[in-house]
Image 1 (spheres, one colour):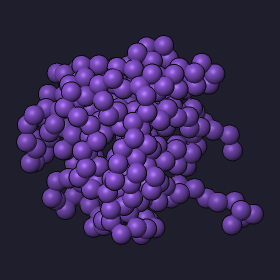
Image 2 (spheres, rainbow, N blue to C red):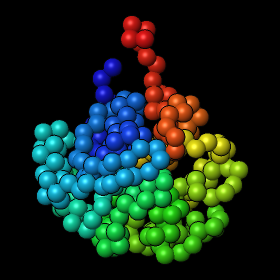
Image 3 (cartoon, rainbow, N blue to C red):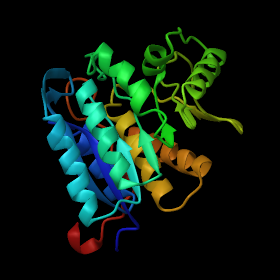
Length: 270
């Protein structure tokens, strides 16, 4: 099987393998894509939390992007953890030279265990420099609250927040509803043409580490293969739900999901 498309992932590393660039590579590969990376930070973490974050030099992040894309042109780009204003500016500058329109931005701000992964000035730079450049942004409720400065308690608040993000320059917003206490998961896709609500039954599990990274990478992969936005979001959500449902149960905290759920392993490799 040959890869269907090439995805550049710009994100931080997760030493436990459940989130970040490791989850991104697994997702892109499991869905039939070829993954390239520009590492923004190395984190020391496991399923119970983040111990430390070691940032990569902003200039080197920009060089990773340009040098990689000069050789292998990506069909899509997924952006995850960007921890400082300097990093965001470096990424934005490098992207001008890459010229790939299918950019999915996951504004990673808080780890599953509650650790803050981005500072206040970086949030401002993200709003000014990157949100307008992305084709799709995929915030969860806490991230949308930080970006819009409103409290989100229900579906109406989610729609209101998405409209604020639209006014900030976002082209398409997929606002994820997983943090709401409800029986059903409601994710909303909003743009200037209208709104689509994806409704799925919520699963009771602690093993949801890396779901946001995985979803944005899955959507970027489907988009890069030429699928329309609505269908890419629908397929990405389905992949994540199946990965949660078949999670391996690793770790003592928020365990990883099962990225292999889409793969049929050839008999000779079993």
